[in-house]
Image (cartoon, rainbow, N blue to C red; front, side, top):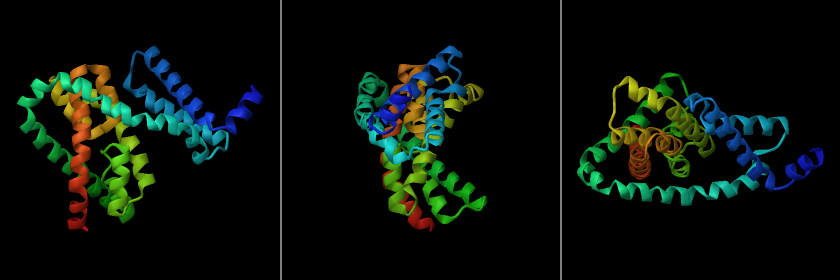
Length: 235
């Protein structure tokens, strides 16, 4: 085992292997514990990887040399969301106006609330600007953060944290608010919790996942168009 560890730690294969093993462990634990959202596989996997890199004194750059293979698959996985969305095309045609209004208000509320709370708590300008795109999928959020003067690396952490919180608390909040329509829940999850929330939505229902995927993609587009102008106006 020691020889295997030495080999993996010095090879790009380490990042790929560690990511797959951590997520598999997280998914096994998630299923064994009755699919409780508090043990969402992404949350468990991230925690395990952080602990592993810290204990092994391994830099993130070395880890990502292998993990980039998984990162590459984010693109095809996102495009594949078009398949369940196509199955909901007829329903989508009837709901385009409520969806459009929800997206615009969701993007504005998500950004303005984050900025307001951060400013109220005394966060610096750079931190505030990094928080603004927290509800957008990671690649787009990092691009927006760089454009408006935030820190892309900090934004990436905030995006993942937001997604995990949405995946963990989202369904319970829907029950509390007595929201039963899967299309409504999907739009809310996609706008607020992007990719991680969409993955959780697909676990709950195909319809919810399809609308969450749509909301995630459209909110990323809307954020890229709206946030730079909004930040320029506010600051």
